[in-house]
Length: 488
Image: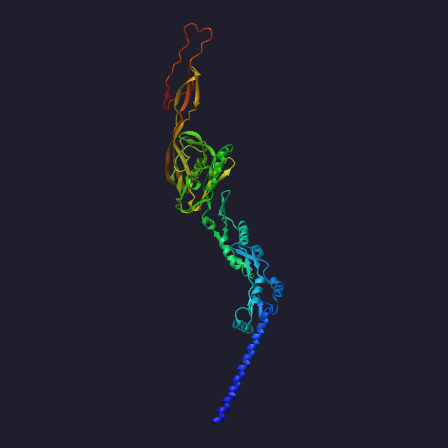
C-alpha cells in the first residue's frame, strides 16, 4: 500500500473514532442531564417497584396511596401459629406487627439519588437493564408480642395425663394418656420477632416443650387383672383424719412398679407437714394417743401393706403399732413415721404392677393390678394369738375420800400374734412363709385411791377424835397377768 493510501485510511479511522467519542460524550451528557432532571423531581425513578407494585414516576404520597390500595389487601389477614397438637390464627397487629409502607416508599424514592454522579449513572443503567423491587418489611413491637404469647400460655399449656386403668366388676380397661405441652415464651418470641418482619408470612411455628406422660398406655399393657384388694373402715366424722387419709392415698394412687422396683410409703407420700396440706389427728406415740399433723397415714400404710401381702409381693420393711388398732386385725397393721420408720416392698413378680387407691363412703381401699400370670391365691393366717393382761397401778389421792377408788386411765389388754402367708397356684400350696410375730404391749390401768380423812361433825371436836387417821400409802403396782377389778 502506498503512503497516500495509508494516510487516507488513517484519516478515515480518526474521523470515525472522533465521531464515536462525540456520540458517547453526547449520550453521556444526555444521560447526566436526564438523571439530574429526575433527581430534581419528587418522582420515583423508572423500573422501580415496591413489593411487586409499580410505583415508577409517582411521588412518595402517590406511591403510598397506591400501596395501600394494591398491596395491603394482598397481605395475609391472619398469621397461623402452629404447634404440636393445634394452631391459633391471629391478626398480625395482635402480634405487634405493623407494615412499614412509608419506609418502603422512602427507600424506593432514594434509588438513583444516592451517591455521586457516577453511582447515580450506574444505578440508572442497572434499572434500565433489570429493574429494582423494594421489599416491604414489618416492625414488631416486642412487648405487645410478649403479652400475646403470655395470653396463649393459658390456652396452649396442658399437663401430661397418665394412662389410666379402670376397674369395673374386676374387669380391667386401659384409658390412654395424653402428652403435655408447654409453650416456651422466650424461644417463641425470638423466632416470631424475625418471622413477623416478613409481612407475607402466613404460618409460623411456635416453640413448645412436649412432655410425655410418666405412664403411657404401653406401660400398662401387662395390667390385666386385679391381683389383690384390701379395705379398712374409718370414721368420716373425724374430719382432719379423713382429710389426711384421702390426701396420702391420692399421692399413692396410680403408682406403677416395674419388676424389681421398690415401693416406699415415706418416699411417695412425703413429709406430713401443714404446708403439704396435712391436718392434725390422733396417733399412737409411746403407747399413748396424742394429736399430731398427718395422723391417719398409718391406716393408709396398713391398707396397702395387706394388699401387698395378698399380691405375693416381697416385703422389705414393716413395723407394727405399739397398741392394736381398730381398723384391721392385730398382725395385719403397719405403722410409719417420716424420717424414722417406713413401710417398703418390692415388685418381686415377673411383670409391672399398678397400685390404685381411694375412698368409698367410710372405707379406705386399695387394689394391686398386674399380669394374669402373676395372679396367685394368697391366704393370710394368724396363729398363736394370745391376750396379754394389763396391770393395775394405784396412786394415792388426798382429794378423794378414804376408801374411794376411781379409774383414771382404763387398762387395755395387749396381744401376741404370728402371721403366716400361704401362696397357692391352681389350688396347690407352693409357698408358706412366716411373716412376723407381733407383741402389742398392754396398757396399765391407773387407779386413784382416796386417802382423805373423814370429817368430824361440828360439836364433837372437844375430845379426842376417834376418826381413823389418814394414812399415806405407797402406790401399789399389780404385775401383768393378774386380773384386778374395782372393789365392790
